[in-house]
Length: 557
RNA sequence: GCGCCCGUAGCUCAGCUGGAUAGAGCAUCUGUCUUCGGAACAGAGGGUCGGCGGUUCGAAUCCGUCCGGGCGUACCA
Image (cartoon, rainbow, N blue to C red):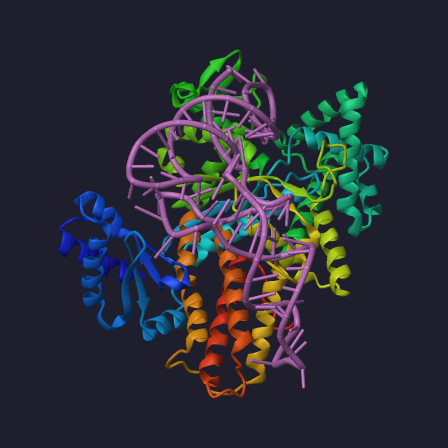
C-alpha cells in the first residue's frame, strides 16, 4: 500500500511535474485492487482531458511497478485502477496480522473512561464506555503505544451523602460492626438500594434532605482530618472499598480491567491549589464569590471552578486530575472518553489548562459517545432507581442468548454485547437490541466468533498437513485480497481512533470467507495446501481483529 | 436566544479529508443445498441520502439557510 502510494507520487512528480495529494482506495472488486482519482485532480489543475491524463499516468505507473502489478487500467471519468500481481497479493495476505500501525510507537498514552461513582450503581452507560474505551486503548496499544488505562470517580459529593444517609438508617445508627451482617455477595445490591432510598428522601423529605447535606459535609471532613477510625469513618471507608470491589469484579467479568483509580478526593486538593494560583496570575477570575474561567473570548462559555463556598467543582477536580496524570505518567498523549454531554464542559476545562500548562492541554484529547437505549423499553430516566443497569443489559442478553441457542454462553453474550456497541461509529446515541446482538445470523459478535471457531475446526481436522501458498485461483484470490486489506483498515481505525472500522471489516471478511468456502473444498482438494494456508490466515486475522475489540475468539463454541 | 451533536431503505446502521450504478444486517419474497460445523451461499423488491439554495467537471460527503430530535449554556457532572 505504502509502496504503491510512493510509486504513484513519484510518477506524478516526474511526468507531470507537480505534487498531488494521492489517495489510494480499495474499489469494488470488479475494478481491481487499488484505485486512485489522482488523474481527475491532475486534469483539473493541468486543464487537460481527465482520461488522457489517466492514460498517461497508467502507462507510466505500469512501467514503474513492473511485475508487481498484473494490470493498470483506466475507467470511468478517469480513474486509474491497479490490479496487483498474485505474488504481491499473497505477500500482503501473509503479512496481514504482522504489520501494525506505528502511530504511537514508544509513546506513553493514558486513556481514561468509564468513570463510575463509588456509592452508586454501574449503569448501561458505564458498560458502553468501558467497552469502547477498552477497544480504543487496544488500538493505541496495537500501534505501539505504552497504554495506561485509568478510571476516575466521585468518592465524595452529594451522592455519597445520600447513600450514607440510607446506610445509617439501615444500620440503625453509626454501627460499623453491623456491616458484617450484609452478605458479601449482596453488598453492591444493598448499596445501590441505599442510594435510591437516599435520593428519594432527598427529594421528598425536607428533614432528611438537611441531614444528607450535613452528612455530605462530614464526608469531606473525613478527608480533612484524615479520619479512618471513628464509627462514621469506618462505615464510609468500608463501603467505599465495597464499591471498588464491585467495580473491579464487574470489569473483570467483562474483561476491561483498569490499572488505576483516581478517586475525586485525591485530585481535588491539587485542582483547588492550582486554580487558586492561576487566579493570582489572572487565568481565572473572581465572580460573585466564585472562581470562574471566562470562555467567551475563545467561543466557549464561562464555568465555575471553585464555588462561593470555596469548594472545588468538577472543573477544578478535572484540572487536578490532568495534573496528577501528568505527574504519574508524563504522557505523550492523554485520551479522555465520556458522554457527549460533557463535550463543551471539557472544552472549557482544557482551554483553562492551556493557559498555564499548554503542553498538557495540547496532549489531551476528548472523545465523546452517545447514550445506550434499550430497544423495546426500560427507561433510563431519573435517579429513582429505574435506570438501566449494566447488569440488566447483560441479563437481557443472556436471556436472548438462551432463547436463541438453548445454551447459556457467557463468552458469546459478552461478544454479542460488545460487538453490538462497537459496530456503531462513536458519537451518536446507540440503540441496543438484545435479540439482534445474540443472533447467530447477520452482523453480530457471535456470528464472528462462530466463523472463527469454524475455521479453526477445519485446521484442526487437517492438522499436520502442508500449508503453503504459491498461486491463487479466482475464489482464493478474492479471499486473499480481503485478508491483505487488514493492515490498512487497522491504520484507519488507529488514525481516527474509531474501532467500528474493524467491525465493518471483520464482517466483510467473514462474508468473503463464506463465499470462498461455499465453492472451494479445502480438505482433500488438490489445492489443499494453498487453501489451508488461506484458512489459517483468515482465522488469525479474524482473531486479531476480535481481540483488538476486546472480544474473545474461541476455537470451539 | 446562543453553542455543540444528530437526521441515509420498514427497522438498526456503514459510507462523510467530494468521485465510478448510495452499501450491509434484520424483516419480506425466490432459489441453491443428502453441509470439510448451512450459525451458509445466490438473487429480488424496497432510498427525493430531512427540505431548499450554493460551490464544483462531479455533493450523502463542503458552505448557507430552514425543519425535526438530543445535549449544553456559572456555583451538578
